[in-house]
Image (cartoon, rainbow, N blue to C red; front, side, top):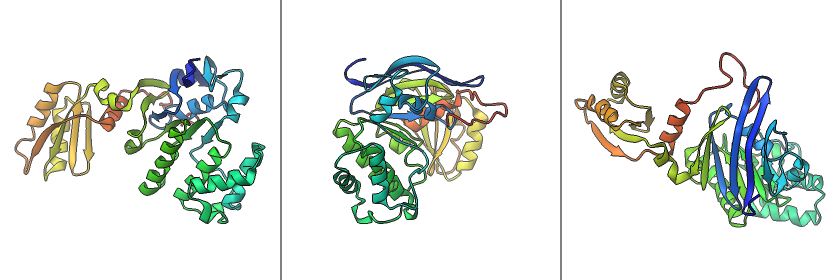
Length: 317
C-alpha cells in the first residue's frame, strides 16, 4: 500500500443472493482527507463502508485499510476505526458521561476519566454530561455519537449519513468538528445526501446501485460531467416547467428556490428549450456553471437500480 493512503482497496465486491450490491469498487483515500460518498438509497454506500471498516467481509477484491489487509485483518482494522451509523445506537437510559465511559471500557482504554473529560470538552458536551442520552435532541445525540466514535482516538472515521434529520446549525457544528479532526490527521469517509455538506469534502465518489460512476476532487466534478446549464426566472414557473418538458433536449430539470435550472450535455438543445419561454412574464434566462447538484441528478438519472422489479433492498442502503 502507498504509505500516504489510509484506504487503498480495489475490486471490492459484495453479493447478497443473486444481487451484486457492490460491484468491483475501487477507492484510495489519503491521510487526513475528507472523502465524500454520494448516491441514492440502496446504492451500496453502507455496504462499502462496512467492508472498509472490517464489519463485513468482501466476496471479492483486495487492498489495505490503515496498512492492514482488508480480507485477513478485519479485527485489527475495527480497533483503529471510528464508525458512526445512520441510527443513534447508544443507551438512552444512560447519561452522556456514562455512555462514553461504557464505550471506553469496551476498548479497554487507560486513563478513562481523562479521556471522557477530553471528549466532553472537545464536542461541547461537558455542561450536559449528566443528561440522559434519550432526552437529547437530534443534534446533541449526533455530538454524543461522534464523541463515542472518537474516544479511542481512531485514525479513520467512517460516517454513514451522520447528519440526517438534524437542523442546519447542528450540521454546521458537526462539520466544524470534522475539519478539526482532519487538521489533526484523522481521515474521514462520509456518506451524505446534502449538497452543502458534499462541497466541504476534498473529494467525492458517486456510487449508484453498486457501481462507481465518478471519483474526483469535488471542485472538478461538474466540469468532468460536462453539463451546460441555464437559470430561468419567471412569475410563471409552472408554465415554464411544462414548456421545458414539452421541448425536451435536456438531462436535468430542477427547481432551485424561485428559479429553474435546466442542464444537459447538448448546449444547442438547452438553448432551443429555453427559447420556448421567451414570451413568459418577467422572464430572465442566464447561462450558469452547472454545479454539484446538477451533476448528481444527471448521474443518478442514468443509473439502473439493481433491486428493481419489486425486490426489496434490505442491504446496501
